[in-house]
Length: 196
Image: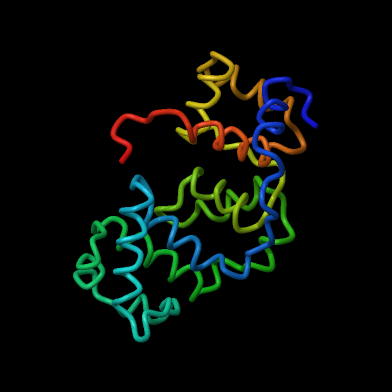
């Protein structure tokens, strides 16, 4: 499948990945969920995200206009920082004023999508790359800044330098998103310091 024996062993071990649909119609929601969960364990991220939803009628995701009218202190009460409260409002504003146009993003190259998304203060390259993979279902994305991928590559290939990692990832084109999925899976049995 890949021109890489190490990766092909992971393919044999873990089998085919789950099918990914294009979820770009949920871009607004997934950007906000991604910001809320940044630098948190999955459990903490889920807790804060559920508290965030509970701030709104029927525990439903607020439309951008409603989110912009929500006070920062109210958002803070869900457990997020002032920074994250500000960032999710930046996302809401980008949808209200049409800075972000999902249909346009669907039609442009990955690098251009990243460029558009990172214009929103609070959305960095890593967030944009995860959105490309998991929301847009793009098949050839590699995230150099992802700590999990770097850890898997260090363990499996014994390399750490950016230049070497990028050179290695070239072998996986045009299926780098799939390669990432297998690399993340390889970490599941790896002890992580502080992992609960």
